[in-house]
Image 1 (cartoon, rainbow, N blue to C red):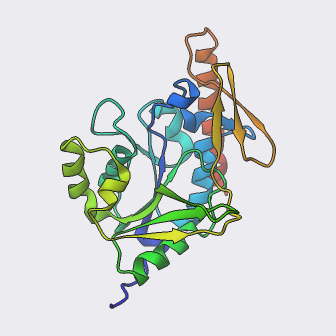
Image 2 (cartoon, rainbow, N blue to C red):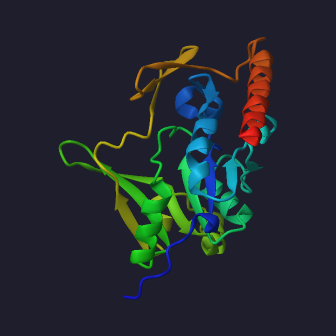
Length: 243
């Protein structure tokens, strides 16, 4: 089998998936939850930026807050929050590159060599999609399908799949040549959200337990929270432009 050329950084657009309902967190916009004083989505963009060319954020709420983060904001073309595949489709449609690298907004510690690992796997296997697996100390394997590098030429097929009412990520991947890329057992780049119907949540698996505050509620403070996030996003963008 002939090895395909390895995608370069400039051929890859980065996509942060932040368009979900946030159901397990009581409906908050997960990408805007603060970690060390900075929104989760901003952490992920910072990790992706050295690995890709252009950057995108898939978001279906608070586009005005995400806009100053320094990445183009794209929304689902399908109604009712149909899931991560809809975010992928929005990213595939907006990308002006041959490849798209996706990561969820709650992965502030994603590997600095994620793009390189997936690009190597894609090229060496002449695959359409490369995604990530990890294993625990007991050797139990876990697939992380929304961490993926895929060809942007798959957009039309994904649109057909979604318009047919399908929603499962793995089922769509199975239609194409996909390869799973193992990461070291020690890799801890995702967070688990524990939500207990209270005004706070916690990031589990972080170096220390970090409180997460709600950013959307019916309380009078909600507007102030949104304004604070907007101001913070403006500061982040200004610092990035100056770097």
